[in-house]
Image (cartoon, rainbow, N blue to C red):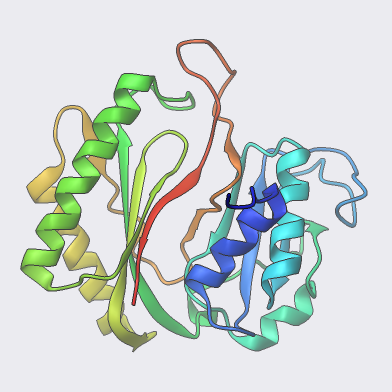
Length: 243
């Protein structure tokens, strides 16, 4: 019988799937307040807590701590950050202040992933229903087949974001962080959106920038209040298709 992973171990696996050993990334959480033993400072201003990480163990422990604190949303930078950024908060969490600088596009070292976010059409600020989520997951599977056929990108990670569906395609090789690479990612997203956005689901077109943050799987998406029809759900990786 396979050992059931703890929340911290599940989050640590996210680092292992997306990054090479020693690469740096940022974790950023929203919707927090007051102080907490998990982070330094008072999160009562903009409600943001962040940190930089270069190993899966600390990454997982801090992600789990943010989830235990009931952050509204917990995210990570999908592409590796320049190593110097680690010095902002070395494998630990800090509350964001008025002078805090989080990851900027120019601080992304390379581009590794094409992110596709399929979000059910609904009122903003609330969770999806079971049927809405099921629809987004089904559309995601069609997108995977389409991208494999049209782009020949056959390495990917499929996931549930809690309210919608995700697939991140591994580019054939790491690309330089240049305007040309960003434009290629943007054009691919536009093509996917034109082919698959419909009345029920929307392919997000604003996830192309290099420093875009992405749902940290293993943590709960808490949009609006939890209700029986529109519940808060834990995000999770469904399938890893990498070589």
